[in-house]
Length: 484
Image (cartoon, rainbow, N blue to C red; front, side, top):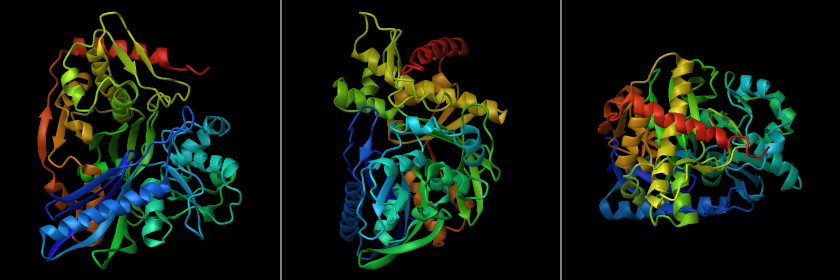
């Protein structure tokens, strides 16, 4: 009988189910998008029912495909990885959502954020006070959408999926560390912050390790353990085999997220980065990471396609962008600016426009903005860690764009390394699930399975790199504090 490990990868724009073999190769996968709901400027929502329906659908599609491919097969464990910070409230008794999921990009809680003591919260949680995180979304739901909180359950998307599949209300250290409610040293919900926000601990999931059996659900007529959970960026770090202190990866997705493993002790940033739990696969022994979160990168390409109609598909940017930027700089602060600026009042801008500029220059500026924002984070991370990065592993759907990867190498001045298995987020969740079931024996074994696909070396001079970056920083200053 063929034995595999599965991973539910529930992202900002869609849900994927992937099946991996013992070598970490993709055996089968299915993907479905879900709607993006924009009720007001700055508000972003998803339908939680649609998300769980899409999840069940992609699992069923993979099951049918595996039936055609193999005479006998089994999935010995399934992991969950998910868009982080996106918050769901539902009724404990009926299981019905009480409101749409409020997405991590949503900015409606700005006023709540401005009432909170940033220094206390950052010291305990490793996070800056920002609309990005789940805690203020929960407070907004209690104030605006929930009539009675007696039977209310809160969770990030991992908890919503696990509850629907197994009826267990749990989360893991990585997702809990993104709520702005967990003490990252004690690895427990923090009573002081809960009281500050008026959130009862009984509403929240139990915090567990990232690799253990949470419950069971049925696949192919058998009860399969759901046995790992990792926030998507931590899962990508895990799937990229970044198990050593100083190992770093940059995910190119809806946003960009650069994480560096800092080992068993949380590293405090003085440069606008976040301290977060990287993973916890040995009970309460966890690894921490420094993280630079960028709200809008791939989402800006979607904006070119869906809002402006400049392109028909995201792939077109690779051919369109092979031009000089014409002096155009694009700052995609649609949801404010995240790391290292943390300006909730910033808004998107396109600067340097002249009559010379065509859609090609706009497309180029959008691609460059992904790389400039990542350079901002790299510089902050090198300042905090006091040592330079020589190479950065990359993953995410946009990394198939060779022009984008070369631009990242040129603008960052770093060697950029792309892995053979690009879907490292799902792979990381699968790895953690496989470890829980002894499908793999150790992280050392997993590290040996990581393989390079292609690397990109910087091809412009340091002088040119710094000149381009100077204009980027000037553009950022123009975008900051727009909503005075």
